Amino acid sequence: PDKCKSIPGALSMVYRSSGIGGLYRGLGPTLVAMFPYVGVEFMVYETLKKRWELAFGPVGTAALLLLGALGGAAAQASAHPLDVIRRRMQMQSMNIDKSEEKDKPVKKYSNMFSGLYHVGKHEGIHVLFNGLGPACFEKIPSTAIGYFIYEFLKVALNVASL
Image 1 (cartoon, rainbow, N blue to C red):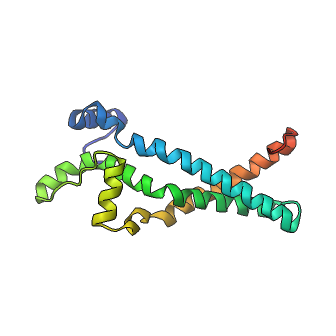
Image 2 (image 1 turned 180 degrees about the vertical axis):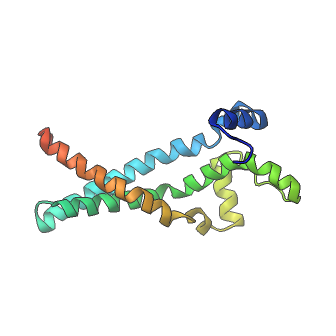
Image 3 (image 1 turned 90 degrees about the horizontal axis):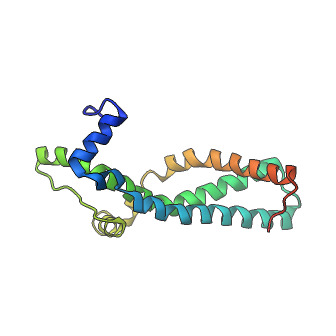
């Protein structure tokens, strides 16, 4: 943050320190995490909605928000370990300068799998879930509202679920 005063300055610094690959560091985990995230979110939401309808009848506004929130929380929990590794991969080039000053070895994750393995083996699996609470607080409201709007538009456009 102290070295870069603008987005072009940050891009230039990353390019100079890590090359073109540095600009894409963490892209693999981001793309891999998208698929289970969206899949888990939708599966949990639709499953809970069907079970709600069987048990209680039509789903009201509060229930839609609750079910959307639960889907978002489940999705965030499933993808969070990959998010942790992605962030570490993106930050590792910035930590090189700091580690040289302190004579500490830099944790190098060449790919998502080596990052998951290294963290799980040397720091513990629980570390992959650090920050899950705040991440859920960020995602849950938007997911809940998103599914409420999804259901509203299905009714407004007269579109049925599969």
